Amino acid sequence: MTAKKPRLPGIHCPHCGERSIVRDSVQVTPIVRELRLTCDNIDCGHYFVAQLSVIRTVRPSARPNPDIHLPNGNWTAPPANDDAPPPANDERPPAAQDSTTRAAPLSG
Ligand SMILES: [Zn+2]
Image: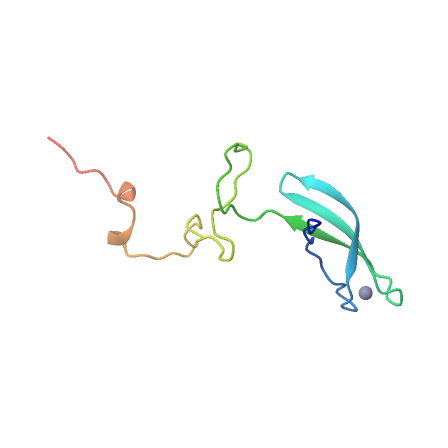
């Protein structure tokens, strides 16, 4: 019995919808690879470029690269966006604002 080769993900031609073939690829950054594809439909002949990028961590690496910062998530759901700054027009009442913005009480 022969082992079944894993099937690589593909992208269809955005113009005619036929299968496309990856002809070449270049690593752009540690998390982005650029793919050069050709449409398999000879009547179309579209050549195009796509990107493959790492977008989140599902299980942390046992050998983490300190230069790589990815959000944590799971296979299907994007991570919670807890790092988003408050909007510039945030008009919370003063009592709800951060205590560091209040004046310190006088002592003595
Ligand atoms: Zn095509």
